[in-house]
Image 1: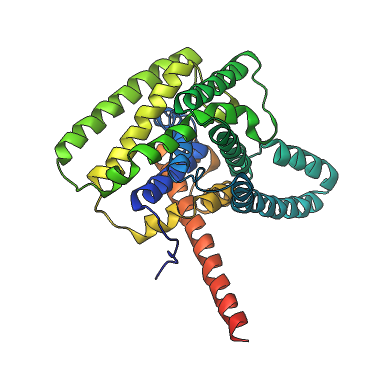
Image 2: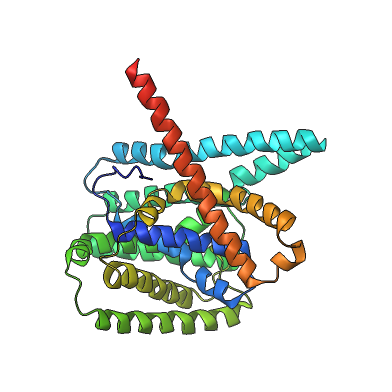
Length: 349
């Protein structure tokens, strides 16, 4: 089996990190009752925005071109996936005899970007679009790097204050955009300052990086555990639940550091077509995994285990996550394979 990996100028460790990140997202959505899930939630969303920042092109293109590219890359897929889910909800509502109520509820969640299990991944696309446009406006409008960093920090503080004092979800995840711009900008600065040297450096002194990685993991664990005690639950960007802003940011950065060191240094020479493919299709996995998880859960409950068991046994939840991840792979790879066949037939005519 081969994968379509023609995207140019890709960096393997970033793709692997994205693939690992989206798998952790699936695990987080499988069941939230374990302390391990609290660890995932401490950094998995900030990780994606950091990684997005490492590949973001702002200075090189005009505002108009940037906007067009982001609409094509993020909003059009969001609209298409939303249309698919709307059709499914119409069919579901018709079968249940409650099409009006089902559609009203679904449309509210789809455009307010706080969906249910099947649509939970959709909120990431417009959120990423908003925060990238926001950062573009800051970078284009402010040339002084210190003032630019200060502006990003100010916006981030506003985001945390809004979540703490008001705590109401805004359309398209705008409330979260004010927080995650910090991580997007951190990734953008990393790209400007040291991405090239980090990626192209020889794999040496693995022990040193392992020690640093373990230290960062301990920092992440300590800060996140303390923050969870303050919250009384795990941190959750989706629910505007951050706890102490400083603890949240520092624990997230430590978690990002762990992933970057493990995949960018310790496993630098590891090659995997599967993980590369998944990393290059995280957008589709985000949009599909809620529906895939619902399907896998129903199949396992029907043929393997009882419902109450699947909600209690961690091993079963890991199986659910892996099966969901693999199902997303099958669907995406199959769609690309069929699409390539159709495209080749059209070109032959």
